[in-house]
Image: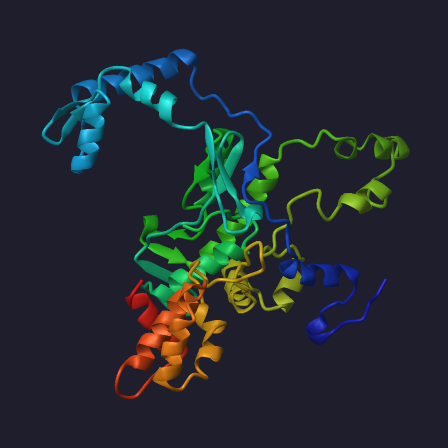
Length: 371
């Protein structure tokens, strides 16, 4: 066993190396959770029938106000009673519409099919919090959010293997046990939704990883039941050095990437960093290492799914220095290519009088203004 010590008495060796590598480990990323447990039934069938009966009573006698003329026409055509903006539903109409038109499950298709999200059935989708006017982190405190904060949280959601959608984990156990299909506000929620926290986002996403493991249920496979290991290690023996333990110890349980499982003395020697401080370092590292996701052809987009056309075709276009060359480009029909928006924007800038700015920012701004 190695007993070499580094700065401040830190011990090196296999265990320390594994712990240091843990925050950088890449967990298997899945597009949604596939639950193996049956939903927990909170109500009896009689209770469910009572709630549905009462809901029908409210819809029939009180109704709902709709302020969209097209929606009012659609509901009236379907058989609802429409008076002005108040819509009342005959008893049983809501159930019949749901049965006739709402699928039991459906797929949200991603640019890369490996990331397609399935909603319904035995699938559960985790999405972070969104819509908060404020953000918070240990460096800047509480402040109004910016578009850059929005991009950062989109990146962090993409980088987390435990969040499936971009858009208070204390309620996650009943949520999963109930079989909820789409769970919003999984990560980053602060102040009742008024703020998004960077550190909170990382800590919540880490907890979402634990719920991934929970939702997998009990492992009933031969490896999970470990009968061979039990036979080999009879009464009075332990399993710490058995082949089964060594083969499964890293993945048998969920292991947090931000928790510190060292002794108190080692934690103190390493700076006494609490969970928030470790999460602060984690989100900064994640953003620094971020690479935009690629589609099935390996093409990458910006953080919020916006194309970055100026990175490919612009260097070639910027070599065009005359309006005659721009006109020739149009005549060749290149505006019908997949770069047509960029080419058109570039040409519009060239054919204007005065100084010509063909920088990527200028071309993107011109393209956006005509999109």
